[in-house]
Amino acid sequence: MMHWDYWRLITIVSISGFVGLLFDQMLLFMFLATFVYAMWLQSIWNRLYEWLKEPKKYDSPSVDGVIDDICREIDRVGKQNRSRKKRLRGYLKQFQAATAALPDAVVVMDDFGKVEWANKAAQLLLGIRWPQDSHVRVNNLIRDPQFHKLLHAPVSKDSIAVVASPIRAEQQLEVKIVNYMGKGRMLIARDMTQTIKLQQMRRDFVANVSHELRTPLTVLHGYLEMFTAESSAEQWGGALPVMQQQTQRMDAMIKDLLVLSQLEMGEKPLEHKPINVGDLLRSIVKDAEQLQHYQQHKIKLELESDKLLLADSDELRSAVSNLVFNAVKYTPAESTVTIRWMVSDKNGCIVVNDNGHGIAEHHLDRLTERFYRVDSGRSQEAGGTGLGLAIVKHILQRHDAELRISSEVGEGSQFSCCFPLLHVLDS
Ligand code: ADP
Image (cartoon, rainbow, N blue to C red; front, side):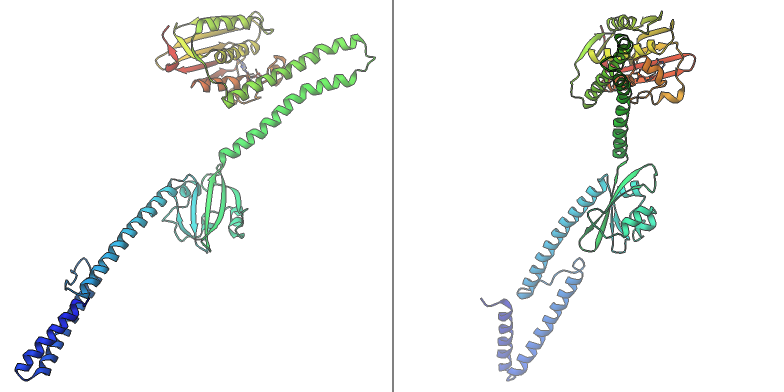
């Protein structure tokens, strides 16, 4: 199909030729008409150029023919580009929002180790601010020698170091350098404080359990080595109670460890039931009176409320028994132990009070740690495992309750189990 432009040119040339023929000047007329047409075309090209340069300011030249087709094609490609750009901008925004929300610090560096981009976590963990620190060398911002070594070493799978955070010395960071897109490098830092603490706790725990079990085993071992087949019944007789006591000690410890690990794993579901606190406390007092260390102690029960407590009865009994038995075990003969059940407008508390020797303040925060004892000799003599209060704390945590401890040397101690009102029911 012939294009508009050809028709236009042919028409102009033919008409001008015909008119020229009338004046006997055909060539001149044709030349003039073609010249005017060329000028007009040039002005169209100029308008097209202006429109391309500033599409918002100028309109596209609307002339039928190839120019119009060019304009339409340019318009279509422009629209396509704009929508692609919009989509890319959307992806970029999404990517930046996702990396900004990452809890790990991400710092993109150029091949000279200068900051090109960093997320928000980089400021919190490493103190690297973006855009303020852009184009600053990372090793000027983080001055840890271990980190410098990592930064200058060739990047490999093992390019990882644990360094202290440059802004919070107690925070331990795992820093990793990874290569990306050829020369670029990316620094990723993760807060490892909690993990390192947990690893340390696990190591301490294993060391503590080994130590705790080793002591009674050493005693047993000593006796067994001493005795031969010829040893007299008298010799055996003297040793047996001690050996029995040591095995009981190991048994108690393993039982408590199992209770604690079950609580920690949370495998046993809680069976919440409304519990008559008065009945429970009366039964615990009876058990306490059977303890070997119960020596003319006076146990007082003060029930200030008749409300019920929604809890797992076995676990609640275990927690409160631990506190009441401790109050008997660690106070001298004739001491008074008071157990109260009281409900305020904030919570419901079972409070175990004694007027024993009390506990020095610096021990209070650590009392619920596993194997922590104020007086190790006294605890062992009382058959303690050092795990009782750790168990109490876990049980209360499972009930959204809290263990509050206060004590004064020479005055006595107070252990309160405080439950949220959600656990307190009308009788
Ligand atoms: P244990 O099995 O040794 O009794 P616990 O975790 O129950 O372990 O208690 C930790 C330590 O807290 C005990 O060894 C003891 O020194 C101290 N303690 C607990 N209750 C009392 C109390 N009522 N009065 C004084 N000291 C106490």
